[in-house]
Length: 424
Ligand code: PMP
Image 1 (cartoon, rainbow, N blue to C red):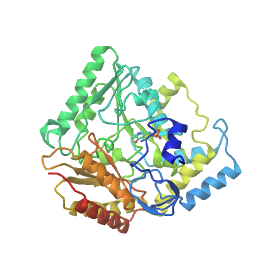
Image 2 (image 1 turned 120 degrees about the vertical axis):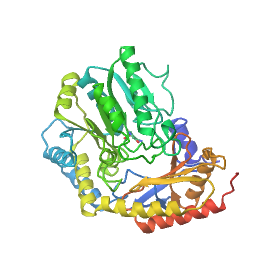
Image 3 (image 1 turned 60 degrees about the vertical axis):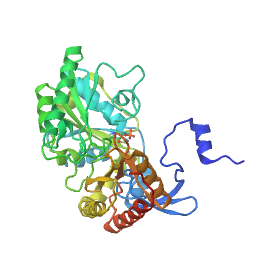
Image 4 (image 1 turned 90 degrees about the vertical axis):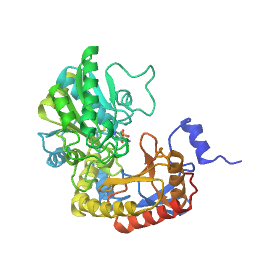
């Protein structure tokens, strides 16, 4: 019998290499919001935030190709592209965030951010939320809860309960900001008592991996006050909400009303070319450089910068943030119009949407959400699941997604919901 792709993958890459779906799509080509598999079948990509301005965007492809043909090298020479990019990128941020390090991945960016907090405070303790993901380096994996670290969480790490819109901390949406801040205050007190001290809190401003909860304006204010009083830094992980996805603001921290000390960027930044970064205020950057030094062979090389620059060009010229607002509002309205006994809440901002599924007794409909996701894939629409119980359907398409694409997705979802058997 011939070996399947899944078997070959396991033979060559080892077990448990995560792929999406029982039968992962064998993709061979992409354009805009569409992907094609090896058999020539087309799929609507409602999930992929890496091709931020669309799969294979010709402008980004041309910029990468032209720069690769002219020069690519490590980052120990002078090159103006990286400077031009940093100038342009930091101009989109406030709060004195004017200096930047470029890396290759979001994980590296978050690792640097954690060390910036240590360098700026002289302390080690760090807080994150309890169902998050910040990367695959040793330090970031110790904050990520998909699997507890070997030997348990290190003494300098504290995870606090993340907010939720269907099961709010403190029992109500109104009580949630104070309840969240209490969790942060408790964690800081524990870190201080343990002798680790408190360096900062890392969070995704959309709480993307926690399930994209709908939060009231000012939600983070009480927690921010607690963090500031304790002398800690706020590290905003913009890998998911950044670069205009939320439609209302270019950055998730602006949408949430947070004034971060450090911002990390990744996935969408190069439309698939590996480029990521860390933005900080000069005094934080100076503390980091003094304590750690830093060099990254590939981070922000000329081709990476050409890709990243072209992404900013396209976002502006094609008005993709405005599109995220308009197409996202339409998509949300379509999700809110769906009728099914298991729909607990449709929510989201811009092109970052969640549909929470709960059974007749209000329990997370994890299995049902898995079946919906698989069935959507069979019918040619790619989306996925998130949340503590993986019961929230998540849509996070390239920003060239339009109302017509949203209609296709919503119509297929309506069919799947109507046809799939469910208990309760
Ligand atoms: N932070 C968040 C919020 C992420 O979603 C991810 C990737 N899933 C990362 C960091 C890590 O980025 P990378 O995979 O580029 O290292």
